[in-house]
Length: 139
Image (cartoon, rainbow, N blue to C red; front, side, top):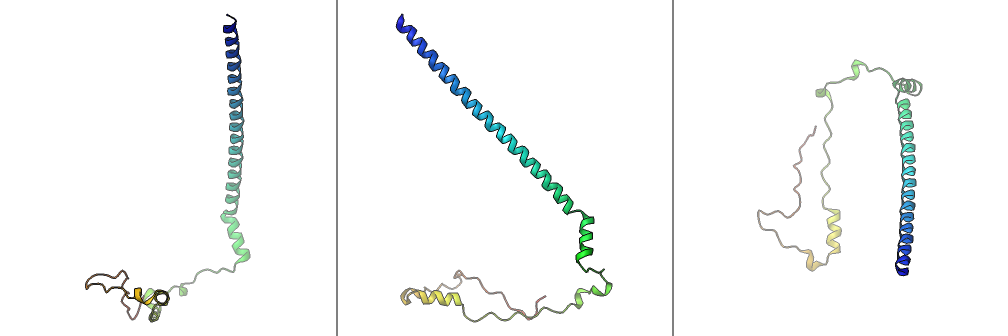
């Protein structure tokens, strides 16, 4: 009977330790939740302050006053508007440079035996893109 009392007492001590451990973990989690709530509140306050500052900076009256003070803007005159047909033509693009400088560097770096690739059969692509046709005038 004495052994049963010792076992029951040991189980009670273990149960008390386990309950204390659970209480301690719950307290730590409650503190963590309170800290997170405080951070959320602080971030919401920062967001509200930034929105208020942005609204102040984006105020059209303030922007108008700054443009009058710092820029020498004038109204648009009708003579400044031109029809599309009367605009000058775009200059002709210069022809592309002969040779490929990067290709030349690659060919110089590759030994002569492996530099000559097999010719592609007629009708198949070699992997390079064709050059677009050059026209005299571009718009």
